[in-house]
Length: 210
Image 1 (spheres, rainbow, N blue to C red):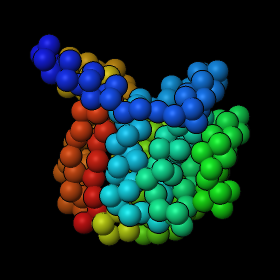
Image 2 (cartoon, rainbow, N blue to C red):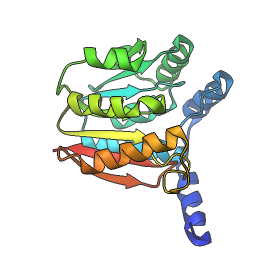
Image 3 (cartoon, rainbow, N blue to C red):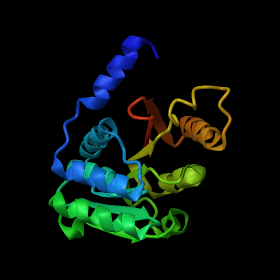
Image 4 (tube, rainbow, N blue to C red):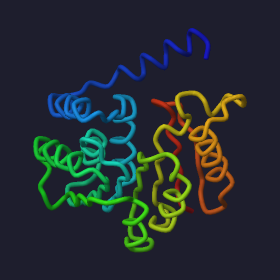
C-alpha cells in the first residue's frame, strides 16, 4: 500500500464517529480479551444492513456486542438479529450493549453454543444477512452454512477476510491465512454468489446470493 493509500485508508477507518454505547461495548470487549471490529467495519455493517433491508440476520461470533449494535442500527425496527457465541460471558456483555443501545429484547436472539452445532439447526433460506466473525479455521464450514441459510438476494459478510494483509502475500502460509485465502477464492468462484472484497478494516468479503 502506498503512503497516500495508507493515509486514505487510515482516514476512512477513523472517520466514523461512535457514541458512548459503542465505546462502552469496546471497553467490555477489551476486558474480556475480545478484539472488536474497528470503526470502519462497524460503519460498513450498519450501511449494508440498512441497504439490504434485512428482516432476519445471523451473526457468528457475538463478542461483546460491538458488531451486533452496528448491525441492529442498520436493520429495520421489526428485524431480528440471531447472534451465536460459545462464551456465555460474551453473550452477557452483548445483551448489556444491546439494552444500552435501546434495542428491545425481542429484536435479538442470543444463542450459546458452537456455531458448527447451531447453524445446521437454523432454517434453510430463512435469513437476509449472515455476518461471519468467528473462529477462522471453521470459516469454510460457516460460509457453506451461510449460503444455505440465505434467501435469494441475501447478503453474506465475512470479517477479517484479508487476515491482516497476509492473504495477499503468497509467502504467508500459516494455517488461518491459507484458510482465508481459500474462502476468498471459493466465494469468488461460487456460481450462487456475486462477491467483492472490500479493504475496510482487515478485509470484508461481501457476497449476495443470486
